Amino acid sequence: GSAGVDLVTAESVTVTDDAVTLITTTSNGPLGYGLAALLLGRSSATKQGIFVQPGVIDADYSGPIKIMVRVFAPPLFIPRGSLIAQLIPFTSSVPHTSQPEQERVGGFGSTGPLTAFAQVLSASKPTRTVIIQNNSPFLPPGTTKVIEAEMMLDTGSDITVI
Image (cartoon, rainbow, N blue to C red; front, top):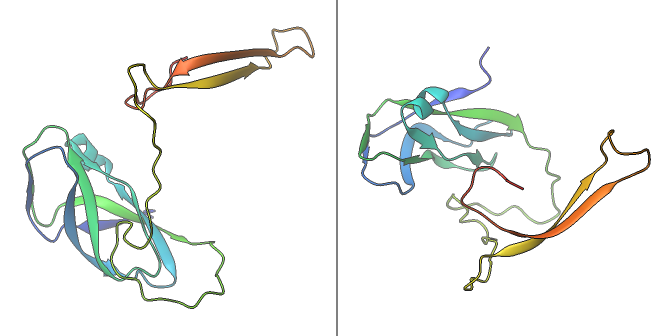
């Protein structure tokens, strides 16, 4: 059978720019049976230029499940009843704490602070010291090749080039 459960959009939306847009679904939390879920895009939506931002639906989340989408060729109309995302359920293995349970309000990170990487910008590009170690079978036995270099960070790339 299928690993995921399809989510149905509850509203028609016209995405007019490349910002993240929230789309309400017909599903609500909690999911039941103590399950949490990954929210992922369906491949058919990606082929149409709809990029679903992945998310986690916690087992104790209650409220409407929303899909975060981006499109890179706006405007794009997503009709009500569309199947653009899916939930992949799983059992959470996070240990319970001794703290009393509090009712959760909100979603999308509203239950805790945001931690974000910050890099001081200057006239030069941001760099980091990178150490590359190679234990190649083509080197003499017991030999390790180590290269240490100052390299530029490129956070806009989908690949790492050395």
